[in-house]
Image 1: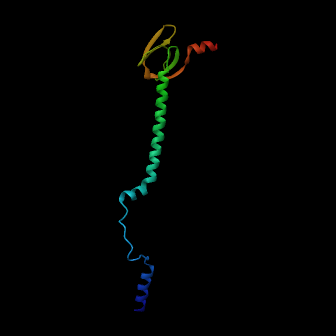
Image 2 (image 1 turned 30 degrees about the vertical axis):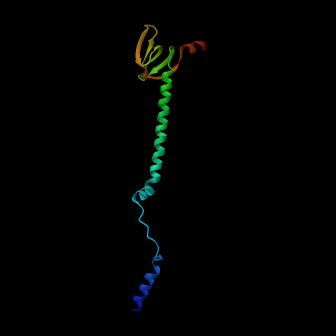
Length: 127
């Protein structure tokens, strides 16, 4: 009997001391627990998303500026690898001279221009 009393006393001593008149708050809402668990991960994904989207927009803006700056006399390379000199620039098309000996001209969509290599005029001035 003495042992049973010791166990009861021990059990009562290890219980947390909560005053009986303390108000019991409602349990934390599920969304709060979710936010505490996954909040840092969500924050990292949002930052990553803005970095990726931001760099993509920057690349698109640079490409658009490059296409808008193409002018007659520029040497360009198309996405297919064709090199030529710009003869005419329209809103959605460029005409390239691709062969000097046979005076071959090809019309391309302006979006087919991959990069501007330089001007023939600037190359002539340097020589």
